[in-house]
Structures are given as structure tokens and as C-alpha cells.
Image (cartoon, rainbow, N blue to C red; front, side):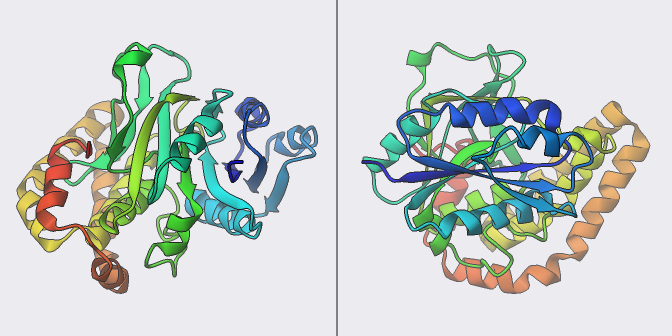
Length: 331
């Protein structure tokens, strides 16, 4: 008998898509599971919608805790159940195939030292396009979704492989990894991030501490993408990414890697700001650049986190650089 799965869903004004997400969780086959949801102060029809899902463990919040703290609250609740070994994070704008959970759990049960897993996540609106196979930090020290926008291949052309990390839009973390990671004073997900890059941060930390993350393509999910963020200003997402990126790198990357990638990182940032200017205008690019400066100014607050994480690192800088240069694919 496989161990229990706890699904965790953070929602904010997403009543229009949340029902389909919950229906897909309730339709999972082959696993014992519970569903935990936190509503981050929604003002839409979320409360009326959730009244139709009496088995879902709902936490109502009067404030928006963000993605990081919202999930941390749910993870803490789920782990109070000693039978829960797998924590599945699912965005409210994601829908799972009926065998998603059992495919990932069965895969994990046959291996040791598994920290995280994700399946093949496709674009919800166009199933012929990939949303994510895994996430990684690239040679410009930026977080990236591997395969984003690519044409989806026939199923037999994908294979399971170890990867840098998993996309928290639809993924599973193991209890063992969650409880073993260093620097949890600000939560499993760093609550100082609020939202964006917290899953890259956790993946980086898990990787350098020796935990395995797996891409398992036979587990299929569908993701709409940034539904909550799109309810904010058009440049909200890049501003949050720019603010959190310096801390993610500073906490997790060895100095050797930071120095060797510094030039490429500066060039990549300039190109990214140029792209933001083209999409959203120069004012948006200027606000994003300001957020980057603010993020750099926040680095002293992460000094203790860096010391704790680097003291627990078991992967050498050269091997980590190889992983980065290989698009986050370990094998």
C-alpha cells in the first residue's frame, strides 16, 4: 500500500477556475489522499464555490499570504497527519490527469532519496504545447522552465530523468525532504519571497543538499499559467521575479558559480529588461529594474540563510555548473 498524499491548493480570487482544479483532485485514482486549501482573502465567489466541496479542508484567511506562506500553512497542516508522506502542490489554475498522483507515487516508491517529482505539464489551452518539464537555473543565473512553449512530443519519446527541480504549479515533494532541508526558519518556501521563485529556491536548496528530483512524463497535468498574477498590474510578475532573483542566487549558489556566471548574468538581465520594455513599455522595465536594485539591497537579510545552506551543501561547484550548463538535466 502506497503512502498518503496531501494535495495543497492556494487560491486568491480564482473561483472561475478553482472548481475544475478540485474536481481533478477528487478524481485521482489509486492513492489515499486529502485536500487542503487556503483562501487568501478572496472577494469573488470562492466561498460559495467551496460550499460544494465539503471534504476539502479549507482555511479562510483575511489577508493575502502569498504563494509561499499560503503553501507553508497548508504543508504544516498536512504533516500533522502521520500517514502523509507526499505533499502535492497544485495551482488553482491547474488540472491533473486522473492517474497523475498514483504515477508519481508509484515511481517514487521504487526509489530512495527522492525529494521531488513532477510530470509532463501541458498548456491547458493548447495540449500540443508544453508548459513545463522541470525548472532549473540557467547559465545567466535566471530561473527557467525547461520545454516551455515547445511542441509536445509523442509520449514514447519522453523518458524519466533526474532534473534540477520541479515546477510548483503541479508537483510532489516528499515528507523526508521537506523535514530535512536546512534553513526553514522562514518556512519550507521562503516567506520573504511572497510569490515567484520560491519553487526555484527550494529546488536549488534540495539539489545542493543531495536530494533527487525527477521528471516522470507519464504523469500529465494541464496549467493555465499565472491566473492570479494576471489580476495584478502587467509588470507585477517581472517585478517580483527581479526582487527575489538575487536572494535565490545568493542563498544557494557557491561563490565560484556566481563569479563564473556574473558576466552572462548581467547580459541576461539587460536582455530581459529590453524584452519587458518591448512587451509592457519602458516604464514597466524601469520599475522592474528598481525591483532588482531593491532585491540586491535585501541581500544582507539573507546572510544567515546562506551560511546555513552552504554548510549543508554536498554538491561541488564544478558539478553544479555542469548541471546548469546541461539545462538542469542530470540524467
